[in-house]
View 1 (spheres, helix red, strand yellow):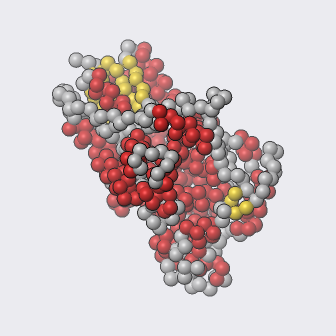
View 2 (cartoon, one colour):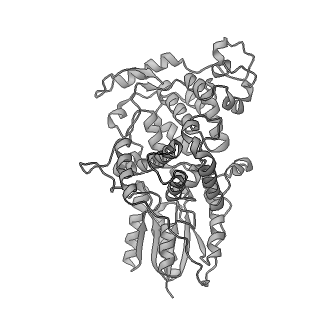
View 3 (tube, one colour):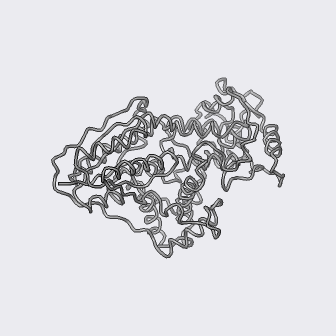
Length: 483
């Protein structure tokens, strides 16, 4: 008897899994997951994220077991070894066809092309499916036939496509007859990735049940207030689904359908919170398309090539202070400590700390991008790169170079009572709601010996950043202002 093989990657779920359902519909199915720790290290994947994958794999193994689909675990240090590993599984179990959901990025594409070539040479079919996106990259193009470089027209085309053909949810596979193959145990950790503490694991429980519960709770209780509360880090205004989306424990189709159901099927009208959240799903989509249309962003290159001439500063001590949450700017430090302890950072604060690093400290955005990836449980190349290049004014649809967030005004606006700061910087908890945003203004007399003074003067550093950007050959000053 020949079998189908579902090769699992960033799609760790049973429901609405295109490749899994297609494999099961084609015949008796076996699943495989390939552990690639050396590749993950090369990609700066965070230990907490790898731990999250493993925990979700264990949950998925149980769910697949209920469908009589065994899960095999294989090892390939780097992706160069994956074609041979997959081929060996196919030979061992008489696999007729391999099914996988598409992944994006230069290395992912090269890996899948190599696997397809090896399988074809041995008479095994390789099927790939659109799954982690609503639209296939290359299908949403400008009138000139090129990939969009600005989000607004990209979103407009996406809305038109969604109105004409809403992506449908895919049913989970039916239970199959038990094959004579047993599942492999999922390891609790892999070499090179120390597991996080239980506190972080408690914040991010694994499994589809948890992901779907979060989605349902958000759609029923919080999505109406998403637009008005999403920028306030002390409020529970976000969905807390990014880690589950990044690992494929829930799909963007499931998220879209939940948002539409909460908004009577409306995309662009009705509840502003639902519309705003759908826009965030499309931002995720946009950056994935950029990854395919402009592969240089996968290779540590700036999207706006002229910005590669920027004279970034080599300031290791300031970089370390930023990484450790010891800059003397409370909102920046609180955000960085949230990242270090939880593997996650509020999106508004991701922009604030990124602009502080790239504009006020004038340190290369790639340093920040790398540090985030090494600590984020929801680390995703496209979204992380897109966000960092937006904030540093080097990317597609980026903030104008003269837009430089002032961390003090951002703090006063979005954490007016200092609740977020007090939670993550308890050494400042005794300060007033006014003083907590800028303790340095008290002249160092606020009695907090363990909190450092600011490592940079915001006004002077802002002028330095503007001068650096204005010096680029293709730049012309278009104005200046703080937000």
